[in-house]
Image 1 (cartoon, rainbow, N blue to C red):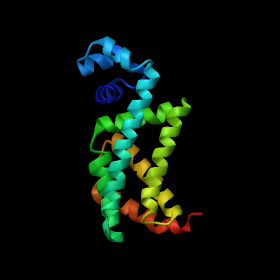
Image 2 (cartoon, helix red, strand yellow):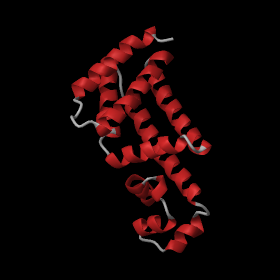
Image 3 (tube, one colour):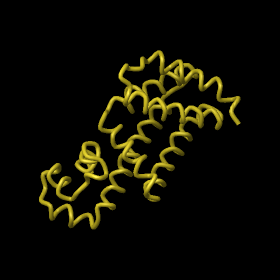
Image 4 (cartoon, helix red, strand yellow):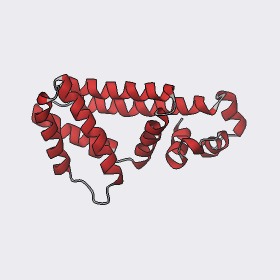
Length: 171
């Protein structure tokens, strides 16, 4: 799966082939085709692996937070140090989003991930605020991954604080 994720990050879903994964894993092509009947099977499992890794890391980061002020800092670190710090993970994430538009299996994987993120946030905020924060986090991820000027921790913190304070007004 690590090799499949590397190929996804480098070449996208369109570039996934048994041969590319075998080369990345340094295993014979027959080993890949023996264990995975179709490329769709590989892509689905790679995305499931990716989502499980990211969602678990996010849940653990938030579970370790104690006070409300500490919570915003924890979310800032989850964004800047966990999610945005790895360009390959970001690339796989965007491949998942794009593929989810076309494939129901991957749409379900994406929806489950969004639910887990929102549920982790809902342990600390009301449901509407949790949803708003999740949307802000997703938007920040896009901006952090393609911004020509880096977005500072303080700017991320300010946006999250604004969303957390405004969330109670969202219905």
